[in-house]
Length: 259
Length: 256
Image (cartoon, rainbow over all chains, first blue to last red; front, side, top):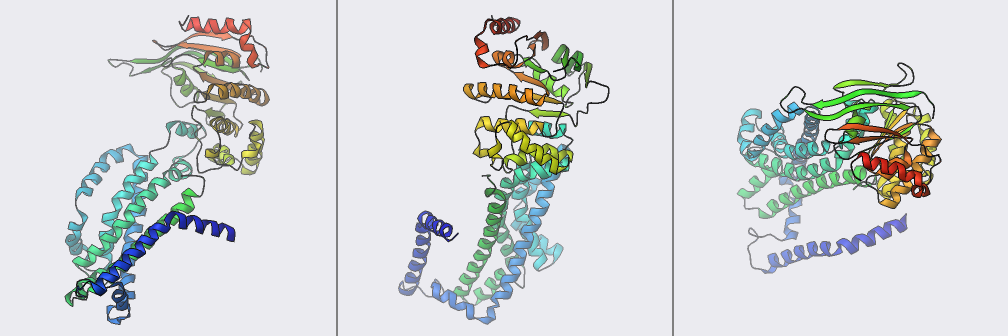
């Protein structure tokens, strides 16, 4: 096992060592430019100044980060559940597909961010509203990719299933859904990134909590270091969500001989 | 093989868009009998209706006219229980192991899984893949994958196995090997098999009977009894008798 870990670590270093180095290099250059470049700190704070803002209790980092995280994850989870369910309905009913898929495509053309103020009218300020905006923005990729994945079943396999009395639900559970998983996950990865943007935009428009709201608060004081820190935390939440999706994909798809 | 008629078809016909401006005849004039345990080769060009015939026998399409009876006695054949199918593509689920793939029809039918697992082990042995049960499809060659799909078609102990160009996607050498394997599996399992193919020598080598079908219009041209002895071997292809049968099929297909 430890040998396995060693090999994996060695392989990782070989494949990605360069990329990690470039990331670190960029942070180093940033630090040097900020320290010696002659720019005022409100224009470009250094990474260390940025980290120092974590001790500013007035920013209520943890509370704000948790709110933003709940909005992102909530909107994302809702989009995945409703998106997959809707795609399933489309795969079962051609009529539903023909009637409602074009509507979905039209609705997707509406910039969801522009709906923000309307959603605030409907749901009021706060967490639920921002979750809805995140949901609206990341729902569509899940529906599209899942519907595509569910429809990829070979007709002959369907014949075979029908000669042994397979029910719709059995076909979905044993053939369609596992077959669609790679599609669903690619949709989820796109959605994970969009959900972050949706939640933060919601917080910009109208909110009294969350990292997006915090950014507007500290902007007034030209506390650029805290703004950067907020962006970093938002990014980390996004990375964590994306990582969780990728891990789940690996567990469910790649490990079992697929991919 | 018994002399009990197992499939009786008379005057079977399939027309699309009947009564419309341009009806399309997908199948006509099919009258034939297949005995229990027989291997019927169905050979013909594209558009001769051989796949349509399969679909109708499988209960997946309705005939426009004619009669179809399956089973040696009235009511002893259930098309939703007693049919196994093999297609040109192996159609294995890539996230399931070989054994899990073979078990799929048993799961759909809700058969007792303990017995089904035992039968899957037996079938793996029958198709010569005893060592490969835990592998995933992509770890197998094309011929091996098709063996798995044959094993899958037998898991629920069907009375009738329908094969639609099962070896059409394999290279020539693998195909000949699979022909011999199929003959062995057929003899060991005693199933009634309908084997659709483009390959004339394959049809003659395998079939105890051959249904020769022609296109334009799609119809059954002739039934041929193949009186070559079993077990059949590849070298029979060089025998005079074999040539007589293949020439007969070629001439029926207008390819002389």
